[in-house]
Length: 347
Figure (cartoon, one colour):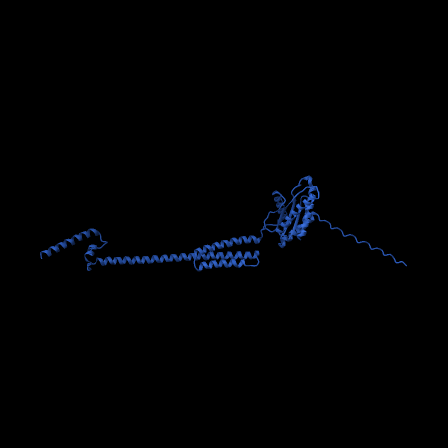
């Protein structure tokens, strides 16, 4: 008895090939990734790749082949570097978007892609391929800088960078916008604030002495050292550091002004005190001089011949016609002496 021959199972249908996305669909996905980057604040970079030749109207077929080869090179580089992204090829350029890729990482991809295209051209020539040689240029756009950002702005930035690379001879990649985060900007402002604060401290050191100078210098050193020793540098921390320095700087300026005013006031008080002392001394000297003149003018005191010649009895220094009266009294005195001598001789 023969066994029934089993009916062969129907062969499994081959899996359908994935349908390629259209340019419009790919641009929509790129827009969504850009929106996510803006919402969550992660870096995103964009590459725009262009040929350095064959841009004429009748060279579309050559461009297509060269851009296809360039796109294969881009896929190989991103696979090796384990970078995920989205890419599309248009008639004259390749556009690629890499979420979570920093500008530095995008620069690495661009550099290796340019080198890969050069190497591919050398291989084709060695194999006898007759296709024309052509290098590529790449423009890089990114969101790691200040200012407004959107997907059209990101693509425009990459396009401008590509035009600049081609204008400078091609076969290179250029990132037109430098990386400038909010933290970088705040750090620059903070460095300026610290510089102003240190100059203020130097001025304070020159103008103040002793405990005041030591206090100002130690205060500045402690503030700068405290924030410099932080394990994490974030925009929030930098804002706090800047605010602290601003407040302290204002208070030091106010304190310095009060201190300077106090020193000026103290100096003025010392000058006024010295002026009062000088006035009192002058008053005492005037009184002493007047008293000496009064005593010297008293007839009851015999100062001898010299003093009589110096200040004649009964004649004050401040009297009117002092010199005339002095000479007249001198003559009377000398005549009196002559008379006394004569009387002595007769006796």
